[in-house]
Length: 104
Image 1 (cartoon, rainbow, N blue to C red):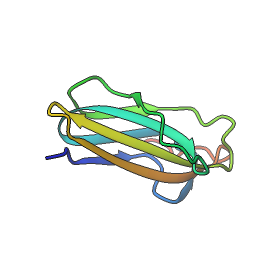
Image 2 (spheres, rainbow, N blue to C red):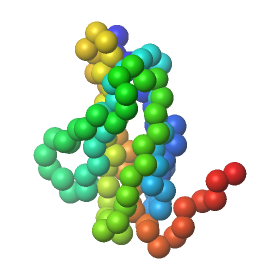
Image 3 (cartoon, helix red, strand yellow):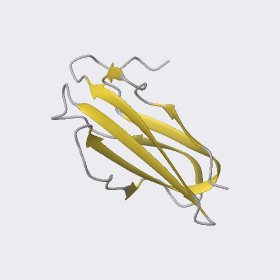
């Protein structure tokens, strides 16, 4: 069975946000792969490893310079030891003029 993965923190689906960090998790050890592209991108995502092998959770920080006002897609893929794959996406618009929410 493919792993269950979820995005646990980051810009909300469809939001306009200045957040620049993603957290995600899996119900089993996996290798996470990530990609970000403008929503107008018409090709398959170009994934990069974005965690250590056998992670069950991870946080990724990224920069949003030169992305103001652009609609972006965050792609997350997880592959378990058996080779099962799960992919999910999150869409948002980058707002670099509003500071991110203060950490509590």
